[in-house]
Length: 234
Image (cartoon, rainbow, N blue to C red):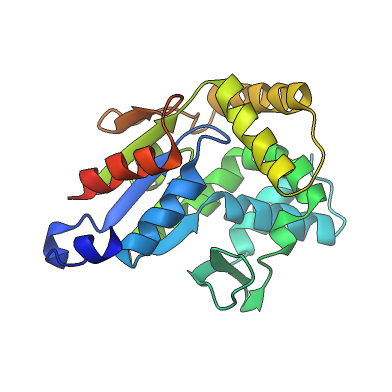
């Protein structure tokens, strides 16, 4: 697919591609594969919220102090770059030139990022940084408010959706495949709670942009979803 697509004139390709959707909807999997096929930068914007969360924890800050966390987000310059190491990362996450890619994936960050990402000031500060990166073009940006807030003028907007049950099953299967242990019902409860937080927050709630192509993926394989997405790019 990559070789076939790369025979097309680059002027025919969308330069800024926004992919939104709820937790575990396959955004990162499809976005990374699409970016690889196009030779674009893959940017999961959730990494920025994770970066701020990790920095706050690293500085022993009170995560419920909205003003302090917002100030941290406003003064912290975060950037992303193509992966510099073959260690499973999709891209580098840099703060003042320091690589903190794997710190953003720590369990304590997982447990607290929803609190940080709900703050109005944090979202405003990081949306501005995400927009700066997106405007460079040749990028596949994934998140929950890319098509609606961060890149409302994106060349192509896609919203991936699936039932909470299907998304929980996918996450469960991934954990088991890695040799881990998991409880499906616990995962489902977390997925539903994350959906509630994301869709009801006051700032940039999760929803499909009016001009987004919505793909329901419950009955589709990853390959089938990718085929539909790559077709939209053509």
